Image: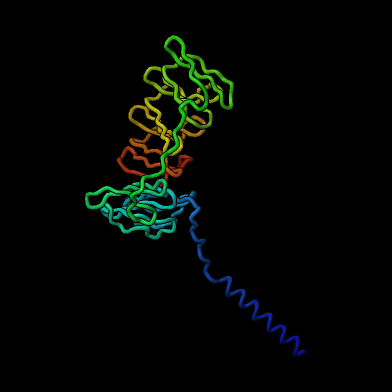
Length: 270
């Protein structure tokens, strides 16, 4: 009988212990370096949110940039510095200007001097590795006839685009081509079908981000092209910068800035 009471008392202690543990507050999971954070603006303050637009790093800055190669510039007052994806400082907030990292380097300005720093914040003197040259006709060959130009795909398709355009440029991915008739631009896919009508003032892609999500312009308003050759966003912004690390900085008609992700979602709250 005494043995049974001992066992019963022992089980009571175990159950009480489990109850106490279950009532303790759980810590939020730590932010990992691999998780994507997007600059997030709330009113005039900036922090970083996850892909669900939940605030991860606090609204502690006057302006911030995207995380590229694990580092992002932040501004407090008139000065800039760099942080990592956990919010820890990589440099002092001391620069008059600061740019995104690329190839382990970022251009900054301090005391009227412009120079390059490495990911440890120290000035660099060695030049960056040269970028690979890109063949602007890597998906096929131009076909010319009577002052007009067409295209013959040789990579991934045997489609021939009729010679009815004034200019054709290769977008270097997904079989997409930029085409111009007169002053207007559109987009063709690898089957020779228009995915975006020839109706836009400009479509600009940059090698710096692998020609992804080109900026589209019409009547002074900007948006982006998606990877299928259609519009990722409406053309409603007064300024749009190229995507960097799957986010892009835009300016709204009321003069405020914010960031989009590669699904076109806006990361700000007024």
